[in-house]
Amino acid sequence: MAKDTGTTTHVAAGELLVATGLQKRFGTTYAVRGIDLRVKAGEVLGFLGPNGAGKSTSMRMVTGYLEPTAGTITLCGVNLLTHPIEAKRTFGYLPEGAPAYPEMTVEEFLAFVAAARGYSGSEARDRVEGVIERVHLQGVRRKSFETLSKGYKRRTGLAQALMHDPRILILDEPTDGLDPNQKHEVRELIRDLGKDRAVVLSTHILEEVEAVCTRAMVINHGSVVFDGTPAEMESKAPAHITKNRMDHVFRMLTTGDRATLHAKHAKGARR
Image 1 (cartoon, rainbow, N blue to C red):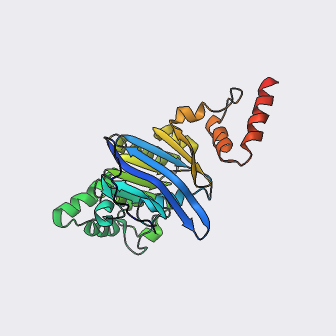
Image 2: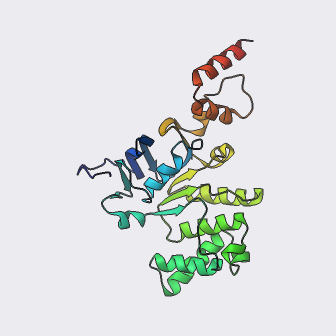
Image 3: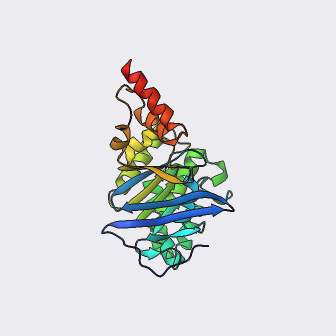
């Protein structure tokens, strides 16, 4: 169990999400090995990693669904471990699967979320109408959640995350299941939201990182192996690689045999 050391985490101006020394151990196995994560207002961070890298575990710790073995988490200046209720009011979260009551209509579910967030009367109705319009759910508002396509389920999940207009958004695969037009709409929405919020976007689609994110972080085996802009990540690809350069760098960063890969690319470049 993580303990509050009583020390104050230094938060730089504009930093809304700060996690330092984040670790998670299951028995003798470390899923996360000491990640530092800082996201400012105006940043959209693409959080990347192969399956089993510790990405989902990290997001669950940052959102308070899983207690870290060690480390501190501060959201809008509020310590998540010592003031969990206050801290959780600062962010909106779209988890994997976007769980909801299957028999509820979209409108009913969002009204339920508004009430859970403390809204009532005309304010609750205005909040529900606002997110329905913002995420383009007008055509399915009276359909039950269980009858929705995967894409509309994801959009409904995104709508509930936006209900209280949070300063921090944590989104796990927000465009999963969307068709190309829907992906474009949601990416435009995320880009717009990221102008004055801190957004953490977990995705396995590198094209999405290039299209939406101002920064990319790659983790592997529970540790950070890259943190920089998408352009900086792409620049790590060897010069002779002209297509899918970010995909190439991602493989380079997350495969166990990186030294062999570097040698192979160098040999190919000399030919």
